[in-house]
Image 1 (cartoon, one colour):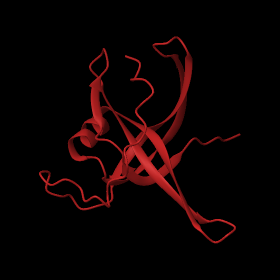
Image 2: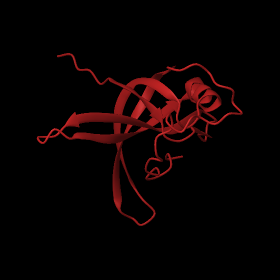
Image 3: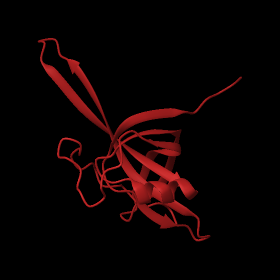
Length: 135
């Protein structure tokens, strides 16, 4: 039987990608991505919810997103879901689900890097990562 683990997200980068290197010098970048859902409740009022996703970009993709993306950038991420468990510094077991990106598409024109993104383009800061990557 065929199985598929694929996710596609379109949203705003919540924090500038952070580039790190593994013990074997392999680059890996981590960033958050905000997606929004809007609906009307039973009374007809407009409701909105923001979902935050942890995005991991390995190798040359990690270097590219670190170089070209900033907070508030509008992007499309295609990848797969991965769940992992670890113990945090307090000794508690933590389970996180991440998107391992295979492709990141830039959905807006490149701006001058000296200019900050417009306030309307930048979502509120997302939650801080639970724990750094395990290396």
